[in-house]
Length: 175
Image (cartoon, rainbow, N blue to C red; front, side):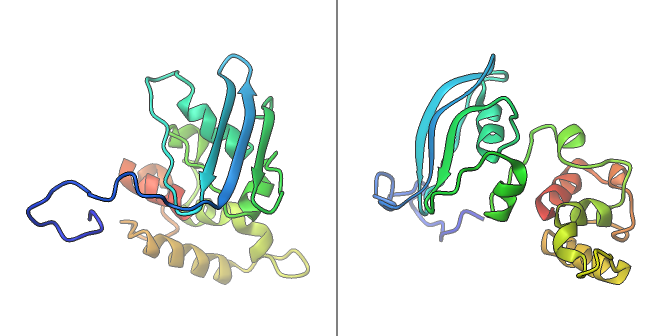
């Protein structure tokens, strides 16, 4: 669970070691009026960067802003290849995801099936050249991703609203 053998030392000894010089995302002067102001940081390859704070401190808005989900965002979010992340589709195309703390209102559609929730962001990729969707293909896609997350469910046709909180979160991550 912790990614290493737990022996006599319970704390990691590799703190302070350099991760990488390669910057994969650069955030400059990002502000969302009334929420966050002038945020700047670089995310390096292999680095896990977290933000913490009290509720309403703006830590959640930083993630939304970097994902392109804050429509009144100012400043820039730039990837290593020069791509500017200004909207959600661009973020998704570059393998960036955002999981909201308020999953029931912002991350899933409660009154839809697990299949529909998992497939929703990938419909363009799942459609054939004539923009037709195959129910069989959608079901296989949803089953694969739900199983990868070990979602406890009756089937992918089950409504998300019938799941436990943890399994709802697994559907969000499978998306």
